[in-house]
Image 1 (cartoon, helix red, strand yellow):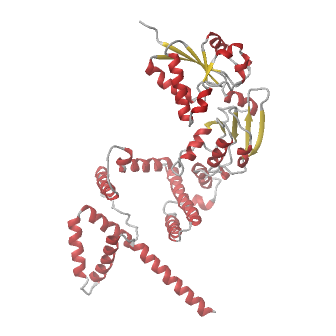
Image 2: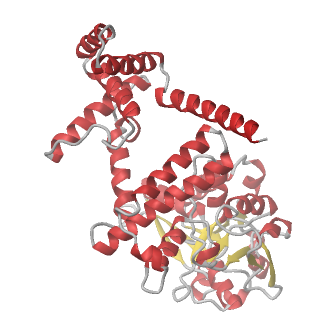
Image 3: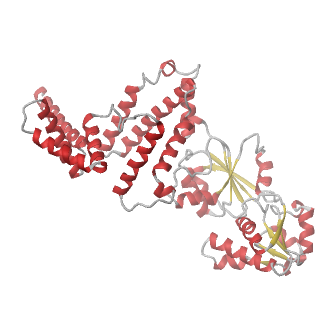
Length: 456
């Protein structure tokens, strides 16, 4: 029985020869060696390195990092299939080495066994310089290319940022100014632009350099493959993430917080939730992005407040709110998160009706189709639209009855007039509530103008 092919992956550490482990040195002496790149200080410390192969030529021909890493992995596997091979990479093989991740996936498929010999990573080299304890300081380790990926996926990368500004972060793979520039744009979403960051270059080497500068200047620094960036944790009051808002609200509600906030209940906050929602609707009506940004913040504050009050009562926590709505979205979008297929928006709505009906059946109770506190005009339009989708025959009968009642002189006639207007709006794809609201705003403006004219 033939022995399996063997691939030994060696970490070269940050650079100096004295930082190379004995096991790594022994493996390099045994060879044969394939270097990911010759651009590493330790390579010149070995006289025999002139005979070592490298993958530097692939850097010239690849059009993307993804293509490059795949080509390197293919070359490594091709050589390892014919004879034992030592593949040497900078730092630690399991810290920021995309080619190693690829090899760990692909090698077993080719019957190749892998042995990994650790090396000092950029993390090991940076920690002594910055006097950091990764556990006690709760340091986040981030790949700069993940930040770049978030930018490339914008505007659909919300929630994908791989770090929180409330804890310190160490960013590696900051190869050049282009990567730094893209990383800066992403980091500016959650950090103040003037937060002081520390750039460490050539950590672990005799020419190591440290520079402190504001975030908005990080793309003006000369970068190379041996550069890392450290971001300190920022104060909750300066942060721009939901966790910070939760902490602020919890502080307001705490025994040492604000007397007014501490007195509030779900019931006492009802009017504020309604007011903030209407103010957000006003901002939408006015097409005012700045106002909408502010008003959505006020609505979010109400959500966080109610979740905090619920947690104090032992009813539920904010994470339950988030988890519940995610479960609902996944359940109601099987055409996105499952195998179902729909061909149009109307098919999506029909599917929604089926799913929501099933949900109500599982809950074992009759739940209103739409909130009973919803404005009557809005509620009527929603219900009529639903009736038209789910029971077209009943909708036609109701429509005929409404038209007959238009000739009556009674409360029923007023109701019929209102419903007829709602029917016309629904069938024309018009939001009756918005139309009426705009008219009242115009009338209000006329009245105010007339009043001002009389006063002058």
